[in-house]
Image (tube, rainbow, N blue to C red; front, top):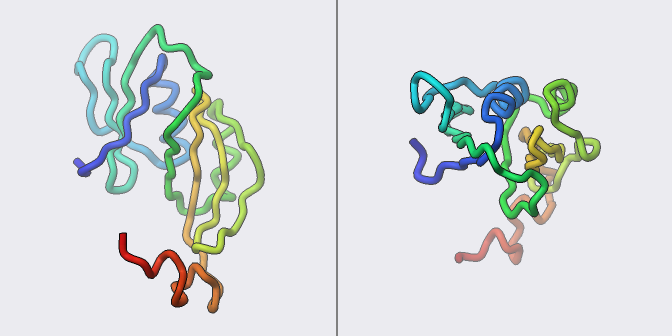
Length: 139
């Protein structure tokens, strides 16, 4: 397990599991309990486990304070899968100056998700690490 594990609370872990399988290639890695109604689904996404925790009475639509970012092989190629599995595309993908192509979407519960894949950073951009940029300063 990673040192930090993202976990999404949802009234329907199976629906979200299907969404993340279709969009991010997630594979079920754990299920608790093994039989009966699920409380926890662990999904392997690359080298990370995304946890889905069942909470039947959860009211969807409450303000979100966490953003999931998921790296996919090709952002443009997976956008149709977002809507096919109950999610929503919030706008077209964009190339960002820090070297990612990003599409902003929502999963079927309305959680905000950034789908990303790497792109080349233009030479001479602030994102390339020129002196004086925030990326050069220690925290």
